Every structure is written in structure tokens, then in C-alpha cells.
Length: 65
Image (spheres, helix red, strand yellow):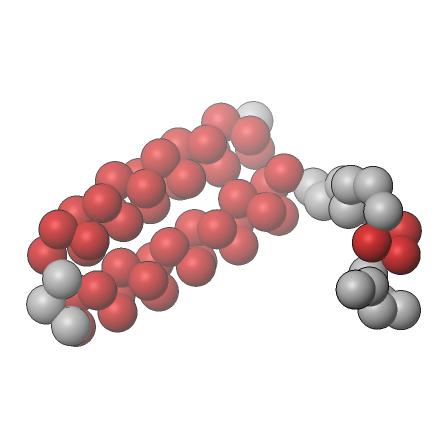
């Protein structure tokens, strides 16, 4: 079911978003998730998110040049 705020009324791909903007948002989101994993003692999940954060930052830096 689609709503009035969905791009293209739910058909087709969403409108393009600048990659740097997306990567910056992902970095922030992954950082917050890692913090939550740390606080709840989820060491393995925290390590996976740390690796994801490093990769997102690398991609963000590569994309900004």
C-alpha cells in the first residue's frame, strides 16, 4: 500500500540521493548502533559495527575527493 508521500507513488526506484550525504548519515547511524551495542555488552556486534563504521568512513572519504 502506498501513501501520498512515497516517491513515484511507490513505483520505481526512489529519487537519487547524493552519495556523500547518504554515507555521512550511515556513519552517524552505525556509530549510534555501535554505542548501543557497547552499552548493552554485545561485544561481537560492537566489533562488527566498528568494522562497518571504518568502511563507511573510508567510502565517505573516497567519495568526497
